[in-house]
Length: 369
Image 1: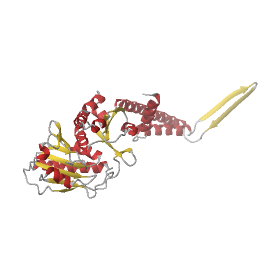
Image 2: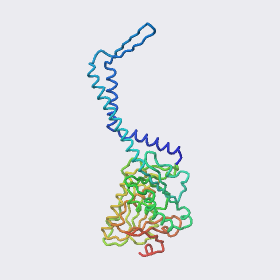
Image 3: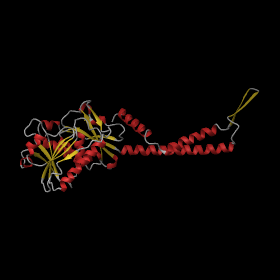
Image 4: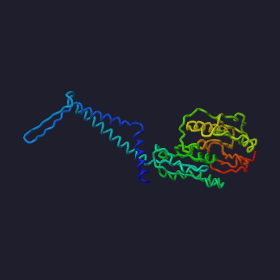
């Protein structure tokens, strides 16, 4: 690490410490300094003596003639004691804060699969308010995706938790913040979310295609939620169901019918799904909760496999993957959508209780109806 980078980190650490929530020790320090200043201005007399040859000079000055000197001594003593105590506590607090920051780490997981973001990497875009050593966990599958080697790309995503643990080293999970974002195939993003489920604190960032920058999900929640349809008509004991989610685009009903035939469809849809509109973390949490409830309800109805057709932003796909409980919910096959090819869903990633599998459209997962 260069000296300039190290200096920037120290300045960032100091600013973050100064601007954090006020500590009682600051009040003690300020109060003590105020008491010392008040006592010095409250009635002290001081003099100057000197001589120049045979001439003797003497001068005296007094700040006040009011308060007794004994009271000023008491105020001065307690002021000094309070100020020194506050300064000592602040120094100890700063040292503890610095030690904790040195133990901390920010693991930055960026997925590159569909867009080259190397000029504006997520690692460089992490806010300086996140304290800790930056650790790069880049997962670049662009060459594999171009070559059609989706299975190898999937394996790199599956290996992500091992990479995070390797970078984390001996640090406790509580000392590590995982920052994640990327532009990748939706099934791989959903899989990545499922793999991130046990990795502690996760902070998502999304790529703004218009301004071409990474953005946090910090906009207010507008209160809009999914509308659920098709659940009440679903008979109990149905083995397979298509769950179509329209969050950033409308799911392609014709492609679903063509690919899955008479398999029942349950849908979760926003009223007017548009790309680039899901910038609220609170809203994404609420939508993920609706997704979880729908999957759990399908499991209660006896569904064994869910074919997931997900039209969502990168961060929402990750968030839903994190919300999916692979140990207690039906297995999910998340499908990739392509507008031009036939079929429109060329492959899916099947997530089961203990394994992950790439499923092509020629498998029984799609053709058996």
